[in-house]
Image 1 (cartoon, rainbow, N blue to C red):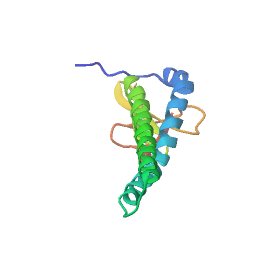
Image 2 (cartoon, rainbow, N blue to C red; image 1 turned 30 degrees about the vertical axis):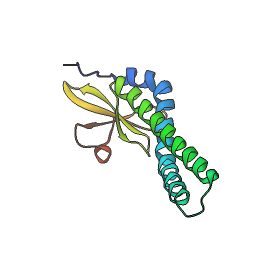
Image 3 (cartoon, one colour; image 1 turned 60 degrees about the vertical axis):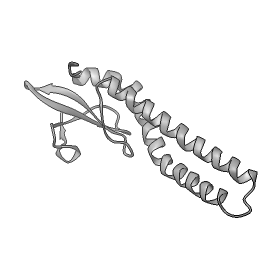
Length: 134
């Protein structure tokens, strides 16, 4: 069984330059992926219409490749966070939690893309609505 990685507030803030890049990529790809998937579905539909030529087949392949590539990059970015022991809570908002201890209790340090530093925490299961200032 793998040991849970926990962070102090200082450690979490020290990781933010790296984490910020990863979370920004996740937020961007999460917003982009539905559009790319729609384009792939449209291209597939158009390629099946009577009289559709090779250009429709090529467009379908390009659209599938774009959606698949974005999905793969998203999965890699999430895996990077998971490998650091950081939990992704809101991909579109760029919301993450760092497991931590506060007064001997396991809690989560809460950070959202756009925030300068880790300055909030909440009890396990409370989520964003339960955020408290450190």
